[in-house]
Amino acid sequence: MSLSRDELEQAWMALTLPDTGAESLPLDATIVAAPTAGPPAPLPHISIGEPVDHNAAEPGPPGPDLVVLGLLGEGGMGRVQVARQRSLEREVALKRPRVSASEGDAQLLRAEAVVTGHLEHPNIVPVHALGVDDRGRPLIIMKRVEGVAWRELLHDDEHPGWGRREPNRQARLVWHLQILAQLCNAIAFAHARGFVHRDMKPANVMIGEFGEVYLIDWGVAVRTGSHARNVDGQPILVGTPSYMAPEMARGGPVDERTDVYLLGATLHEVLTGRVRHDGGNLHAVALQALDSAPVDYGEEVPGELAALANLATSRDPAARPQGVLAFRQALLDHLHHRGSLRLSAEADRGLAAIEADPAAARGGAIDECRFGYREALREWPGNPDALRGVRRCAVAAIRLELARRNVAAARAVLDALADPPADLVAELVRLESALAADREERDRLRRLAEDVDPTVGTRARVFLLVFLFVVAVTISLYALRAYLHGGVGAGQLIAYPSIVAAAVLLVLVLFRRQFAVNAFSRRLIGWFLLLVLMIVGNRLVGQAIGISIGQQFVLDGVLVSALLGAGAIFVFRWLWLCAAMIAAGTLFGVLDPERSLFGFGAAATGAILLGAFLISRASREE
Picture (cartoon, rainbow, N blue to C red):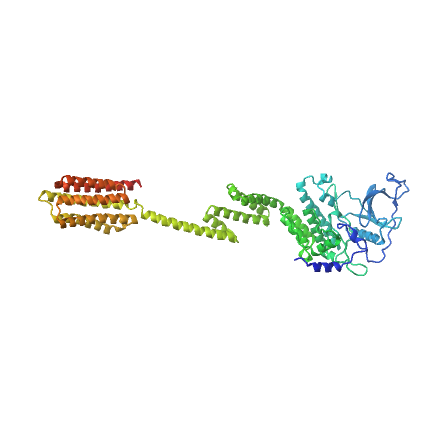
């Protein structure tokens, strides 16, 4: 968590600024303090040839070995000139205090030479000699480094120096990271010798035309564990405010983790193009350094590098990578992981399009993204983007299956997730409940349809009608014989339909499961029984009122044709044909009462036979 404003202000008030005009310096310039040690040891004299003009580079043989050729640059503590070393026929760099420099500046220059002289490393500029010039000012003779400051390349994509270093802009982040990894080697070497640089920043790095990388300006380097104190023992501000670690901003002890912070601040500048602590004045920048709050990097910054930059610039040194080599390894790991990250980034773009418009996604698009993430994980099993992507694919697949109402597929993917999203679980439960309700409703409607389906139980009905036909023909033949040998009595008129009714009831009882298969069949059987029983009742009424046999069959025909007509309206339309046949038989009985028995019997037998045929044909069509 961030420090309060009062805590930051108290830390700032406890700090002393060096008496070197620190407040007037640019915020990305190095603040230095004069050494507190005693008088320096004497140094050997080094004669420098100062030509009258810049074209007089070669004095005569009696002249000094070193001849100044020109100015290379000028910094906070001194100026660097290029000189010709005649004995070795080479150019070297001379670093001396500025003309207006104080004795403190001269001591700092001597200290820088001593530190750098201890550090013979490919990424540290070699020191050839330390002495004093003709005016008694300290003089450092170093290797001349031809190149450009890293800061210039970092902030200028059009710099001509890119031509020989990395023309491809898309590859420059990798190039910068490789530079930073080389600098880690130099700083780790210095730590092994017991020194902390304290001023690592892109402006203090020179890049040669052929890939040489040099960490320069060791002027504020100190021994590990040193405090920044003035002659009175008060903490002072030393280093570059825009980059410095919190312990530097409060004048506390510095160690290897301080340089890790500076590497993290440099990484921040590589990633964003801005310094780590940015403000309008030294006070504001120092407060930022003291707080060192984490930075919220955008999506354009690789997550690994964003995490490393924040970790390395933690306010608590114990939270930082414990050593420069650990920081370097994190950089190298990222470089090794970039192929995996590129695969996951491509899959991210495809999956983002699917998530933005699932309906427009082509078939197999989610599978393609999932394949990309798995390939990324094959190269780097710990790729967090790919791990998140696999989960995002699963979530997208669940949403797609839910949209398709495919509960089984959605449930299978959801169950495979270790921690499924609560909203998707709830949505799946709702869909399962809705589909279950739909199934119940369909089952109910199916049962209702089956209950009123006239095609159900047709075989049983055909059997009943055939049986009824056999009974009817048998009774008709018996009645005809009785009629020809003396007539049909009143008891016989009642007995015949009663026998039919009894036979039908017996069949229905014996085969009730086959007939009572649905509500329609039950209502149809009830209607048929009603028809037979009404004939019996009609016969009883007719005999009770004393009508003739001919009239009885006419009355039976009217009753049966009416009931069949009603059945044609509410049950089967083809019953109109049966009703018509019965009506025809009834009309024959009206016209010829003496033969009404023949007319009714033939019509009833024909109607039964026609019904059996039509029901059987409907069953075959089903």
